[in-house]
Image 1 (cartoon, rainbow, N blue to C red):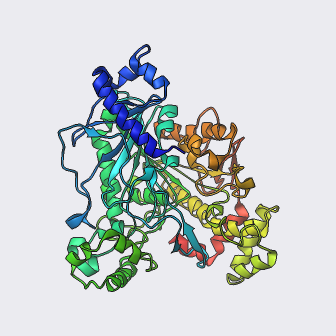
Image 2: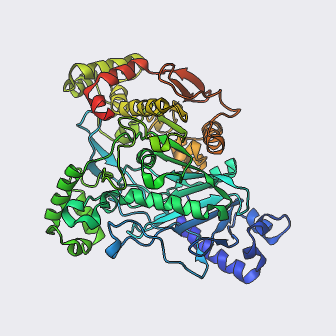
Image 3: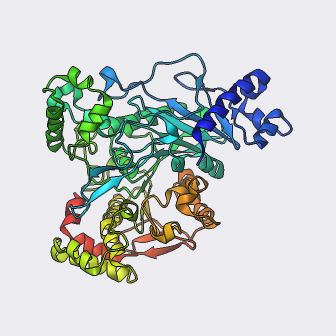
Length: 560
């Protein structure tokens, strides 16, 4: 990983050097790519160069050129959501006249510290998860977090597809600028424009205050999603200045990001702002409800000694104190609520939204999702058959049928991995259910995938974990070799998965020469692209598992 403090010094010194040395280097981005120029010589040393000035609706901006890709980082798309704007809908930023320095990322949203334990019941209702988040680029987390990043091959008029990335971490953690999420390699490999975004999270993005603080806060439980809508409006209004096509925008997200993509597909305010979507290991079928959200909010107010209606007192609570209180209240601000204003229906329950019936989607999962959450547990790798049976005992006959189905699907799996599969099954089941509901609309296709390539790191113990597809579809595998391992296979996987995402962004179909023809999903054959070193189409790849999960009470509740 890069020493970011060193990068910061390099960027600052470079900008000073370029300003003093030559006006031409800052006048046009293309000057940096002309052979025989000072830009060509400096680029050969791996030194970033300043881009030309791009005009946005808020004012002029300048970024950096690194390895032939123009990056504009930390672009403010909304006013700081602080003071009287805390828990309010995002507002457009105040315009500026001087050139905005877009050479470095903006701050990540406020969130709990790395390694925090949170209560997050899984499909069986009894698992505690340890959640990790890395504040990117050594930035200090801040409520002033509404920034986005743009990577582009050129600020020209080519009208490239726009691939808008929404980070994971549930609705509580993460940042759009973590190394694995950075879009420079994807922009270069696919000749596309990549955007990543930060937005409000946890208690700052999803605290339902309508009952406690009045109608002015009726949509406070959805402001994190409203941030994403405003960011997409920014793309619509500005991306042409960065070589992108505002009429061809693909939204994509993994885990919590996938759930956010699901929700955007049903939000009236997002209609028309995107044209394709990818939901990766995060099928969002339903959203929360106001009544339980209001109860959790009341517990927070009690803990903070704030009475109903005292919004000024609540706004005065420091952000870190708010987070500390949040960590002690299960279920608080765990995601957006159906507020009947911004979110007016469940995203994919009981059916796919009619509003985006014409938007094609990619949806899928990784074979061993939950290893990434459980590999640090003391039982991981040491579970006996007796231990497994004890954990499954409370689930009754349906649980035994699910276990038997996974045992049949993966006969070589140990008790540890069979248990991991039971924890992971919800992602596979929800992804296919979402795809089936989308396909039933009959207006635009759903393409379903499953990643089975196993990372060799940690002696192969992670198998195919949650997030495994990200370094391939974003071409960021070189930044995370500690996750994907050495050798040529990660590039080979990127040439299959990343190229499919680019083809889908460009045409609405994921087909390309490096993979078999990929048919749309239907509920009869149920075709799935299984990504591995040699990818293939498999119809209904886990039928016994699907049927066992479908009959379980947990899955029935999940269906909505």
